[in-house]
Structure formats: structure tokens, C-alpha cells
Image 1: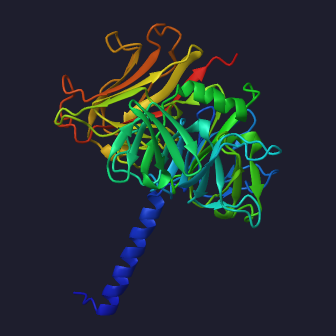
Image 2: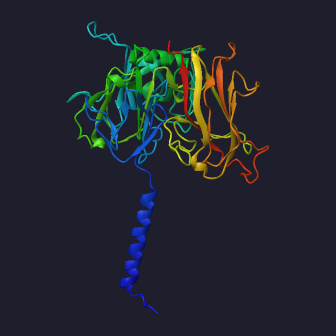
Image 3: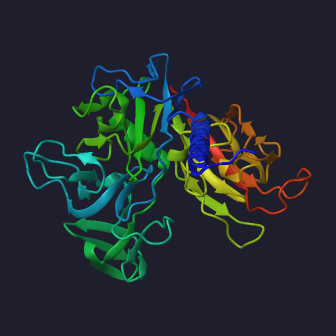
Length: 452
């Protein structure tokens, strides 16, 4: 019989801990996940050589910006998506600048330096000033703005043409005109002037998201046939979309010191370049001008219901329904929608829309549970679906949409409907009896436009 002394027992415990740590490390995926334009996936531990104008990014030595097969998206698995900031300004296409709007200018203050009407924002994100000693103010062009938040409410719902006061009251308006530190509202019964200090949130009138995309593209990619758009999202809630060809760099670290790199991006909505410190960046996305991530287009309507409740959980953009990253059991993804069955997302379609591509699956958060069916409709749900998944049980299953033609959309109802059904009838034996784990994702959906 071997007697275990305290020293022997402590040594065994230490060896067991080392073994467990080693095993956990062996199962842990590399820090970075990337997808190239042709669908090829690249994982790696080291991101290098993206620190200056002449550098070409590499992931474990693999070139990420090959001219024939460039990067589609790049995820940092060590970072998680951030929640909405307490104060921010947001565009019609979903870009977001954390910070406080402190003023408004009509751009005509100087005859020699005319600018577009814009808001003055004091940013609250990891940004470097545009120049040494410059004021940390970003000028946001008013025509691109959808929502201004000074004091975030509990709900994230966007309600067009509505002002929410800090004391809980709300008022709908027909039009809004801004001055420095206030807004004039045109109401049904007259005018009303409200100072910025009284407002919790101001939701401006809705616009056609495709018209907003064309307006953005006119600034970022005057040559759409060659333009590539580049989006950066940080854990602080900063979302910025610019032109990859017009990116800028600041000295901020060696080629392997990626957390100290400083990438300059100038979105269409800003009169100033934004110099972003790369440490908090959790996702980068790129696409050609005619291949639009559907997550940039705001649904014209969304319905979320649960078989067990009157209303379901709010769909999320570029996150799963719980606010985490989009991923299945095996794969990570760069953009899309996280929903809970039953959900319908309806999107307007422009006349030049050609096709839809993407995948549908249960999110990794569902584990081996959950059971849904995903469907794609054109025009109306009263017609047969253009695509339907099999029963999706567990997050190991992924259903590929293939290429769905959008050329046959009814001209009087040019819309796309993404539906996730809890599929209680006919579901396989052994599937969850309830919808608790019916957390589904639309993964990397792309609406392709006619390049011509």
C-alpha cells in the first residue's frame, strides 16, 4: 500500500492541473478566424504586417489580400461583440459612433470653408485625434443619421419620427430642423423647440435603405466596378464602414504588434477620418460594391413570436439572439442575423437585385438541442417558399441557400422574407418539445446586385 504524503498529493494535484490546462489549450481554436472571397477558411494565431500603407496582412504567414481572392471577413475569437453604448449616433445603414452629440452646424459659418450640415460628436471610443493637439470632435454628416442617443432607453427598437424625453415622455413629429444645441419639431398642432439636454433619444424619419447605400457608395466608391468596402467593429460598439482603397495608417506598433496598430477609415458619414486603435477590434468585414451584406439593410418589418408567449425575442444584427458572435458548432461567421423561432424578417429589394446567397443554422448556443425550419419567400408568404431547409436539429447542421434568383420578385411586392419556424409539426423524434433552444442564425447572407 502506497501512503500519499502531502508532498506527493500536492505534486499529483499539480500534474493534474497541468494536464487539464494542456488539454483545454489543445481544444481551443486559434485566436483568429478568416474567410476569403471564394469561401476558403483560414485560422491562425498571429496577425502580422498590416501596420502601414505598403504592408499586406498575413495570418500565420497566409496572405489575406490576394487580388484574386481577397479577405471577406476576419474575426478575433478572443473578443466578444459589445453591447450598445450609453450614448451614440447611428446611421441608416447601421454604422455607429459611440459618443455624445454636443452641437450642430449648418456648414455655412464660413464662406471660404463650406461644409455639409453636420453634428458635432465627442467620441467615446478608442480613437486617435486626427492631428496632434486637435480637438477630439467628429463631424457627422446629418443626411446619413438615423438615430441619436444621449441616454439609452431599455428597448433598442427604432421608431421613426419620434423623440423620447429623458423623463419618459415621447412625441411623434412630422419634420425636424436643427440648431446648435436644439431641434425644432414640426408637430400636428404646431412647432416645438427642444434642447439636446432634454432628449434621451431622437429617431429621425426612415429612408429607403438601398437609396442610403447608393448615397454611401457615391462617396466611397465612385468606380463601383472596382470598389471594395471595409467595415470595422469594436467591442466598444464602434461600427465604421469606409473604402479599403482609401484606408490610412498611423505609426503605432511593429508588424507583429497588431493591438497597437492604428487604422484610419473615413466613412461617407464623417467629414473627418477616424483613426481606430486595433486592440478592441473584434471583426473586420470586406465586400465588393455589388455584393451587399444583407445585415447592412434594415428590415422594413420584423415579427417575432413564440408558441409559448405573445411576443418573441428581438432579432439581432451581426450577433446571435443572445448578443454573442454568430457561429455554429463547427464554424464562425462574419455577419448575419440572430433570431429565435418564430421570426420573419422582411427586406425591400431594389430592381437591380440579382441573387441571394448564405446559410441558415441553429446557433452554437443551442448546443445539440433546438429544432427549426428556415424558409425564404419572395413577395409574400402566401406563395410557396423559394427555398426551405430540412429540419435543423442541433448546431452541427448547416443549410446552404445556394444561389436564389431574385429576378422573379413580383413587381408590386419587391421584398424578401426570411422566416424561421419553430416546426412543431412533423419534427423528428427526440427533438426538443419546447422552443427554448430554437436560436437560429442567418449566416453571411449576401444580396448580389447587377454590377452593370
